[in-house]
Length: 396
Image (cartoon, rainbow, N blue to C red; front, top):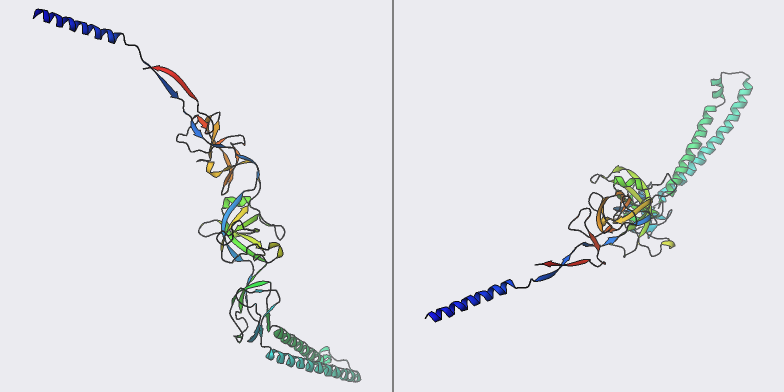
């Protein structure tokens, strides 16, 4: 028993010594790690330098520049009308649209002619009486007062006869005018938008016959922000033209088709609800009837169209897309691989671009990528550049 216990104690001591040796002679383990020095990936663009003419895009309504309700100056029955006297018909200046029965007016003309002949005959008779009265006055051999002398010489009767001749001539001229007015003509090249009468209609002076609009020019009435007015040009009197305007009707015209117009007038009143300035855009030959506009689309009255008004030239500036302009008129610039936040001087904004005169140049690289962290000095890297990696050993 004692021998067995001694052997077990020796084995335990030997095992303990072996374990102590193993743990105290274990080699030191080292691990290789890569520490990534990250920089945010960005895209950049360079502003465009040059002389620009920005465009102000507005919506407007097409209206006639010249409009009239046609009314007759004499009454009667309509006995004839032009084939073009229908809604949508095109008529030329001086074209007879309707004719009123002229029989009564022809008779009135004959009557006035006879009245004039009678008045002329009475005047000639009075001239004969004037000669007799003058001869009798000479035989009297007496000097009378001026008033009595005029009566003796029948001067009042002569003036009355001359007045009756003038009245008869005026009545004759009125009869001729009334006869001419039985033919109702178009006052200018026009389109018939509405017709109120037809053959057999009885009309009186002043009754509406039709609504006509001129074909020479249409207006587009639109509104512009007040701060944009200083960039626009309006005609000075009758000469010159205002800022050019491109008209688009995206819902009715084929893609890419436009019409050209120009600013015509600044209406001296703000639009009621929006408080914007009202302006008129003139479009010549709106129905594209001339050979030079063959194939161009025509304007439709009452339609809503888009107006691209080209403003004054902006020089000594750079142009940047509006989506790259940040809050409070700031721009993110990549400067020596670091972010720089710059405040810029924006002189004008249109639908697509911001025009900048201070704080940015054409050589700057503007960051277009949205960043999670925005502060001066943040490291940046172009997406097309390799990312730098530094590796070093670190003990566990």
